[in-house]
Image 1 (cartoon, helix red, strand yellow):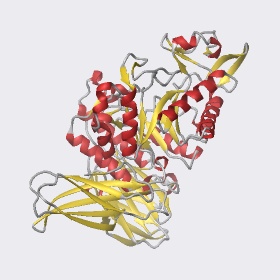
Image 2 (cartoon, rainbow, N blue to C red; image 1 turned 60 degrees about the vertical axis):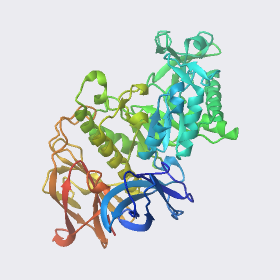
Image 3 (cartoon, rainbow, N blue to C red; image 1 turned 90 degrees about the vertical axis):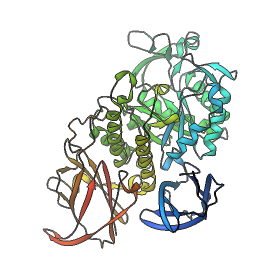
Length: 557
């Protein structure tokens, strides 16, 4: 079961598809739609034996919300008894940028033209914005002159395949984002335009051997306008946006414009290029989405507030720990509180040449996803062919063979859609370090060692607030000693039970709910609570019955 689109827009009819197998005569499918814990819609379909797929369609008025996710539960009834239950999720957004579930495509051969399955599968994970990685002819000359062409790494690709996959993405409500390196050129371009390059302080050109050379993106240099015009051609081809890539170096370089030597501080040139790209393309009458790669958080302080639609950070050492992932997200939100944050955290343990047991890579991935999502960030991870990114060269993606792990991935992506307003909304305030742990007594956790920092062999407690809710994320690191996110984990955290939580609040509490991607298909469960007398007045107290990897508790008032 899955939604007809990766996201829906206001006013669009919602469609939920259910694929059927076996004899189902006289059976009934009942579809229950939830907003958080509240059931808001019920629909029924009477089945006949000829059907192999049915579609629930309905409308939801969502005009008052920028970010709103919904859970869907479908029950199969036979003789008035529930014999099977399925679940999925959907959301209604004005634009992908409010909840950017970024995915990838990297296969564009002529044989791939007939593969309609890749984007259909990606839709099941609600991937609403897709990067088309290395789809182009050359880094400096993006649009191929013929349908069949050879890419910079000698792959034979098809422009027809690229166009077809753009159209297919649009069918599923996804935006198609074209990869484009902002300062890379092939040797044939550089050798004719050496004055457009950026150079080391010893006079050597920056680049990668004789494969790519790096050009000066400053406004004073002709390359600036050249690459912006290339990006405009990409939008005219049918893409919705540009993934503007850089390589994280150099931070400073030497350029020569009209024979005059200048020191380039690229942290200042990048936002100008982003802003000028947006302005030029929109003045030409086209809409464009922009995502810029702040490699390892550089230079997030200058590009976060530029005309890009999300803050995107490709994570590398020394950002090695789970705490580092949290810090990257919270830091970026300070620079651009009105934008979402995407981390490209490639899961190295899946690299086939490392020969790491696949279950250890899966364990590491679940902990990394839980950390990023609980921190309020999004994760570029999943793509075509049930692929998971393990390397910055996306065609090296690893196909996930385990049906069990694929189900876990779907559960996690369903979960972040169902509860997106409690995880990613722009009015959420993180109060962890002032409300729990140390001298703080507003949120007290007993029955397990907990900390507002990510620490080995402890439960990580993130405390957040937004209008009408207090939110507690518990991420389990019990039994985990290696706190580097990109290292294999021999086992998942030790299951923890009966965690007692006390919360001091002046609000009148309506209810307390627990939800997790690890059990009950992510469905919210109401927890009993009581008022008890504490040092600073009456507190509410409740027990979290179980924690596997990640629990989300929300207090409604």
